[in-house]
Length: 155
Image (tube, rainbow, N blue to C red; front, top):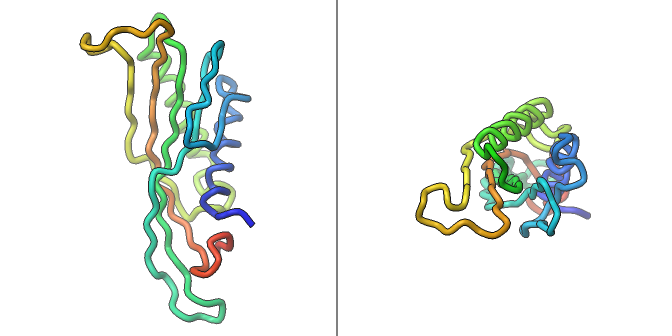
């Protein structure tokens, strides 16, 4: 059985993979799947999770309300206008997640908490790498409910 948190990550991969610029280059991983020759790639990572007791001793046992923070990191090779490229993909990701805002019933809710941009050398204090990569990171918080004794079973 797969932990419900893993199902959520996999659904986000599917949602992001439907974006033409990311198709075939999205992974549910805690590592950056970057190889030479990529144009744009994304990872979906779990940052942390908190749980609180939601239901006590019903016929199915205790239930937990879980709040998981997920990070989507999109990495792309630097181009002529990195700010516009990052803003364009950010708009597409936000729209795709909003269109499936309960991730086909896997979550009660999901919301964007913050967006971070990382452009190496943009502040003038960092040397430009030989193969410049720029990144945008999205932090989402998803809420879902599972049985306390079985994290794969949602309710």
